Image (cartoon, rainbow, N blue to C red; front, side, top):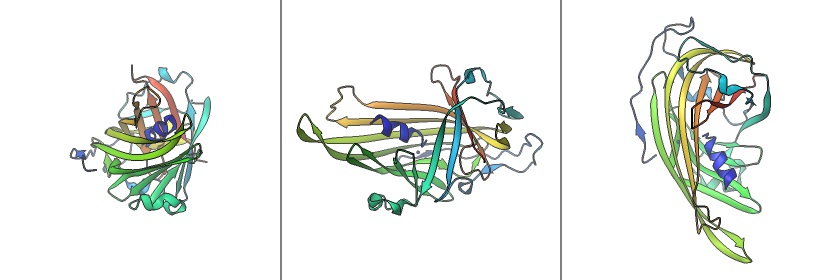
Length: 270
């Protein structure tokens, strides 16, 4: 279940309980750019057949000041990546369980073959379900309340929040007996676009929207054979989105206790 939690948190990755604030335009020029409103659209994110990698650095990143919401941010000195993250977009029809997610028109998988089924339109991207294999057991979780993770267009001072819910029951062997386990996934996302600035990474410089995002995923098993209660994963990140890059240009994972940087990833452009 921990792998499920981590995968969901990437989404990570946020309909019936949707709460949305009005978007506000900002026409202020940033970093010498034009005065026209800068926005990020659905077309700026990946499609079927696209694959992206990001390098992740954690060396002394807690000392980096990322408070700027305008002007520029120079992260070109990041040079101690300790892992690479991958985002791979595939056709939902490639999977036998696709019929469980009739609204999906896009899917995202990791290297462990865990798959998030998505519905992508010009207005939003939402999670409609998750598939993974735990040992030899297929776990298929449709979201009856879809989780909208992006509401477009993204502009400075855009605010959005949503909640989602999915549930399934699987049979597992426990102490020699097959027993049904109910899995419930409660999720929420809240984000605010707080800045518009020029960002330099080791890969290049781009004008970006800066977003503060909080995501929560709670997985509850019944019966609770672990004896540890529900698993909860909370993620607080600064995300920097550039035009036409397909994935997040810069992502800073923050410590929940003091909001310092825990790790910073930057998109590989070559």
